[in-house]
Amino acid sequence: MGECEAQSSIATRVANTMADSETDSSSNTEENMPVSDYACTHYKRKCKLVSPCCQNNYICRFCHDDSENHTLDRANISEVECLACHKQQPLSQTCCNPDCSTKFGNYYCGLCKLFDDEDRQQYHCDGCGLCRVGGRDKFFHCNTCEMCLPISIVDTHKCIVKVSKANCPVCLEDIHTSRIVSHVPSCGHLIHRPCFHSLIKAGFYACPTCGTSMMKMNDLWKSLDEEIADTPMPNEYRDLYCYVLCRDCHKESLTLFHVLGHKCLDCGSYNTVRSKGGLFRRQLPQQSGDSDQAENLEEAAGMDAAEDEL
Image (cartoon, rainbow, N blue to C red; front, side, top):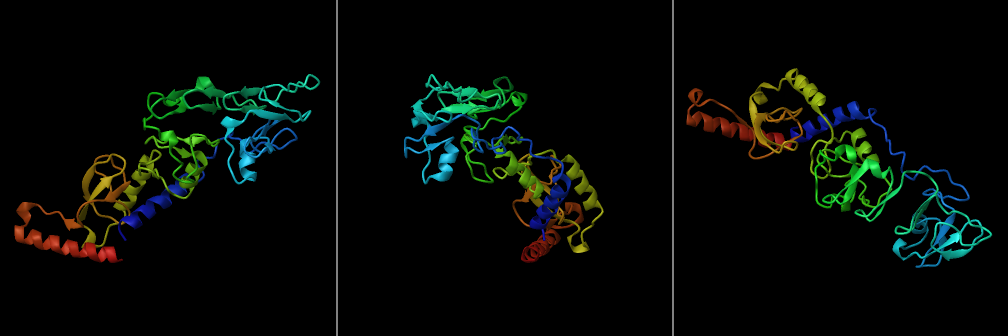
């Protein structure tokens, strides 16, 4: 009973409301590509990378890492193998064999040692130090966040120093070099888009890093207002109050205690946590003397202790 039950109620509502409202739109990730003679599950290209660490040839570094017990440092790659004529040769976009001249990839970046035959509007970002997809004209590089972000949020995004260098708080995988699209909630912390959708479907609406709501919750808070108004507490709990800290506006308020949720009196959010003190009744000084008020406070504290044991 209390805060845990209130959070469970909100999570259930989020799951029921949001589970089917969003779908993963990360179509520009490299995980659903057809496999052919000139491709792996990650890239389409007509060459293999020669691994300087083990001298084994793989189409991409991810295939190498999946097969070997060590990771491939692509900065040290200096040779490729043509998949058409099988000639091993220095890095270039086109096979050096005059009888072959196969173009390894329509996109080639000598800095990242990246070849790709699929047009995904790739571009190299000097600030990120790697290649991105989606089109240079649609993104800008934020020097504080140290990553490329959509142009649409250039004036509204919240800068967090080196936020891209943190791991996804759900899967704990790297975000900066990840091939998976990231979601940017209003708080500014990054989370992989599939992980974000998984959280929403499970009923978790708050950022795993800071606890701020990751979407607009006004309709849900209004629904909770109505349900709380229609669900009065038992008489012994009806006029109890508690201090809460809002995780959306970061302000503290003294609000009415209810098992379905504790409302922030500043912004109206139910994304709150109990803060200082226990439960007590508010009484106007003219209605009660100091001795009566002290007695009521003691009684409410007893209820709080009993409530914590439930």
